[in-house]
Image (cartoon, rainbow, N blue to C red; front, side):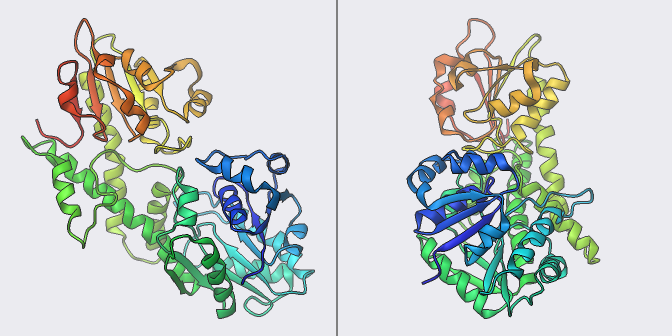
Length: 440
């Protein structure tokens, strides 16, 4: 059985759900953050981030959770430390290690004062070569200790999605461990055997292979998304073609699979776009042209323009556009690289009147756009107020809309259903229904 005391450096969008999940499995968890306000909230029982089911989990297990700004306190009172701080994208597409190295300096100094073997687990996404090339030298310099002998280091990125972080942590497809030494790998594997509820496979390797695997997984997934969107563009130009029918059949082939194979909109959020670009950046530095990754990004960038052109071509004079779906996906308030929010910004720049709705992300949008747009109180309220309604994420709440919400005394409105949430037969008498990826 692994030691029951864990510390987590960085209690943000991923670190806080990790803290709650580990506590729910019987671990005492110390969260470390350089932001005193985050520490205060955690110690008062308030989650500093939004994530579905996090509040309940945190409330139920807060007795095993505390937070501090002191790295020394956290390291000295735990046997394993998970490091999950931002690695923001840089100008050319690489990942900055400034927050990782700043934390490693503090962790190293805390390790210098510790006699017992300590395992550091790097969860932040880094480029191949970063762990051995920069992280280890920083830790060894400030600790005065040798990695693999005096302390262990594993690269252990999570494969999670905002909106389902807790489920993804407890039920991962697989666990990836890049290890400094067998002892460290054994320790982390034993830990995950107590965390995972689905008996997930655990794959162990060296650091660089794990670093490549992490970024390659996200790049492959984005390729499937862009491939499906390419099929959708083709189908829109062929009479009676339907991308939904085509991709459903493609997904039946076990060599392809159905996940992420849907012609709808492009991918967004804090991970997929930047990881795909970083893959191309890394390849270029090695003298390899990542042609597939570059094409994937180019196709993805086209999707927003494709939708915008469709909206503007159908918008009547003095018409109002409704956009439902401002977050980059359902179940989160994150608007970073959101297709819906980027559509809104483009339409605002063209002075198009807008009514917006999203269950979680409206406050974040309000903070950016303020009074330049109107906000609806519900999905049905949004539908009733517009002449063109665009559904940009597959949110279950949007299904509450009924045909009467789109019934007008004048010209019939247009419903652009990017994710095929609605039955077109039910709406044909009250509006013009358009699904992405269908030929006229």
